[in-house]
Image (cartoon, rainbow, N blue to C red; front, side, top):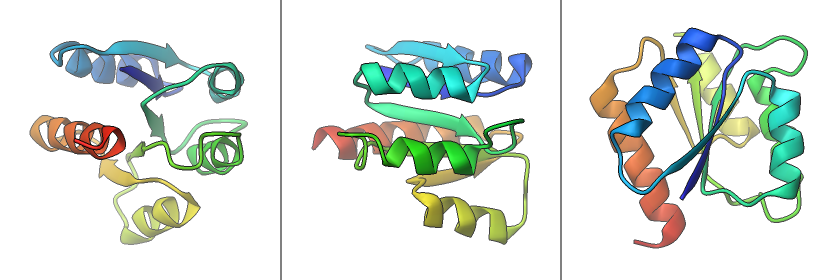
Amino acid sequence: MKIVIIDDDPESLALVRAALQNMDDHQIIDFLLPTEALAWCIRNDLDLVIVDCMMPKLDGMAFIRQFRALEGKANKPILMISSRQEKHARYQALAFGSTDFLTKPLDINKFYDSVKNLLANHLGR
C-alpha cells in the first residue's frame, strides 16, 4: 500500500514516517512541498494521504481541495494532522474533504488506529 505524507516541517515528517515504519506492507512517499506531492499524485495511485494543515504557499485545506478534484482521487482517504486545537479547524478540514483529523502532538495509538481504519475502509476489509 502506498501512503503519501506531506508536511513542511522535516521533524514532523520524520516522526510520522517513523511511526508508519512499524506498520507492515506500506510504501511511504513523503514530501516537504505540497505542490510536489500534488504533482506526484497526478501521476500515481495511492491508498492514503497524510497531510499537515498549516504549510506555506499551499496549505493542507487547499491541497485537499485540489487533490479531490484529480481524476480517481475523490474517494481516497485523507488524514489531516494539525497543531490547531480548536474544533473549527477539524470541521473545516472535514468540510474540505479530509476523511479524519488528528491534532499534534500525535497520540501514537490514536494515529495507528486512524491509519488502520482508513486503509481498511478504503480497501474494503
